[in-house]
Image (cartoon, rainbow, N blue to C red; front, side):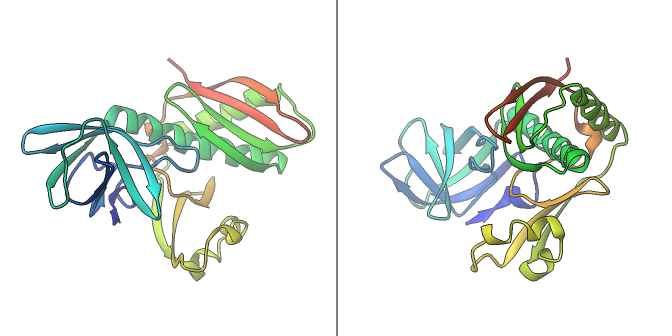
Length: 235
């Protein structure tokens, strides 16, 4: 299956062929621009159209290495030609949150040395989890200001599909080396020059200037050396 979002995060529509349908509702296509839930980023939703009939895509997951589209009504069958249309407003919101999350995570790591242990995007907020003994809540506003300064700079964000060995020359990717099985020969790397460079399969904006200003509105202790910060976009 060709995963179109991998190289073009701005693709809103595409044409594809149904390769298989499981239990009448899980559709496998020969190609897709729908992002499957992964890495803290929710899946895309939208529609598949076939012969003027509309099939809502209500969930997208990766199953056995293939992107599976759960449709809300039955009727699609193997061999059908379909047009996929993504809910773009939702996708673009999550793209902006994902790139903002990379920026904030990079700043926290740079300022404190903390390892980022996870994140979760949503349509109204995003959280970042990191390992740190001391939690300076006053410092969070300084992180917020630094993120917003980077947004103001309108820095281009690039996506590279790199050979495995080339990617492993990047220090931040080397840290994740064990996460890539031997059969992974190509690695997708997201770069925000002088800010962050890491392997990531999610969707991102092409320029930091596309991101609204953020505000850090909540901070929690989640156990020993486990801290959580929430941010959202300002109105």
